[in-house]
Length: 594
Image 1 (cartoon, rainbow, N blue to C red):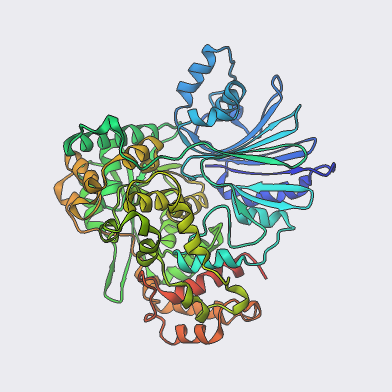
Image 2 (image 1 turned 60 degrees about the vertical axis):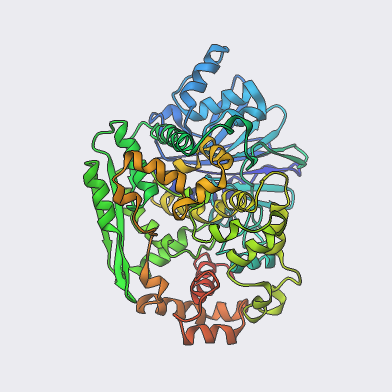
């Protein structure tokens, strides 16, 4: 985990190095171990470093190769960097560090922009060609690592977080009505390239952007699984698929153990994180550190799953850390979590991840986490009902089961000038589901969830919350080879046993059955779900603030009705409607957006 920033000029002026310095400093939490700034010609780059691979000064960034005229900044990890380095060395490349960043630069020299197709990992990078003045931006296949962009007159700025771009100044901070519509319809997901702010965009996942000195650019999308059945799998039965999935997950977990520092696991006690623990223990990782968080019971809802996480920790003899958070810590924790958000995120477990990451970072720098399994292996409860929809009716069926509220309902929530006349959230779904590939309605839904919705909800959530404490989170279920395999798996094998059937079969090979066969859980924070006292007071304060009234995004009668019955109004998907409205306002105020 690191943080990168920079500016490239197209108007003949020198870059604003002071602005790049401010952006770099705003990324300090992502990279507490080092800082660097570089400027030449029309480009300036900044970097904050978290030392995970090559802990020496030779791994410092921005990294320049004077012999080939390249400078790069990099965020993430290339898990197969050692194998790539051996291949590149056999082709005549010399290396002066053991850094994966230097391997990336050599791979770019050897294969150009197509080098990304050889990378196994999570990454965002910026590469500068000194002689040509060309700048290349890249992002990993599943969008695990973020890259935010701000187009301004005569220049482009970029950074690993949206708040870093704000620190640079000059950003159009007006709200994007289309993004607001997505926020209120899609569980706070705003799909790339948009963000909630008109002046900030995101480089989409699996994309390389080549920017010429005049500011023109081309985008290359280098990866997208088909979500169709493959001929080579025709003879596979359920046992074969179980074995194939377990082998692919085993390889993924092994890859994500590559580091020059210890690697721990965020252990919820559910199937997904428990599988990661089992496979790391199988690799004979001694003193494997595992971490679980829980909260006080509120509204009759239990706030921890320690019984299951303790069972797994005992079974595999891990060095287990159990963290119980009292409810009176939540208001302060909430504000700190919101400050760490690059974009507003309403999932209540965002606070849990932030609090957990604070404690985990005291013990390790790298953890593996189970995010993504539900999208990749069809684990959510609504997938079985959706699976029977005809392929042609998939967009409408998806909106019916997934959207928080229909387009017509938004007129009662937001002011007229913030409401698009059409339904941009439905348009987004229709566009993605009409792309070639995806044999069935379920295939189309899993493709959309994995490559769009997941990127800008659970994946972003984990990245933002862990990186705020200088902690690198790795997600084995988003290994691109595992995702390709799951995309080709027959939908009926994923839907069995209440969802994730093929993954549960794999789990029974390595886990206690009571972990695999337990009821599905989640990361509960009851005080937020039920608007318990301290949280409700923070919500009231934010919605009554002068800037909230001046901004006038939400209809006052709607806000008043929500506040009058804070635990009553729920969206179609069961989210607390007051929390959705309040969280956006808290985020805007926290980041001083007027």
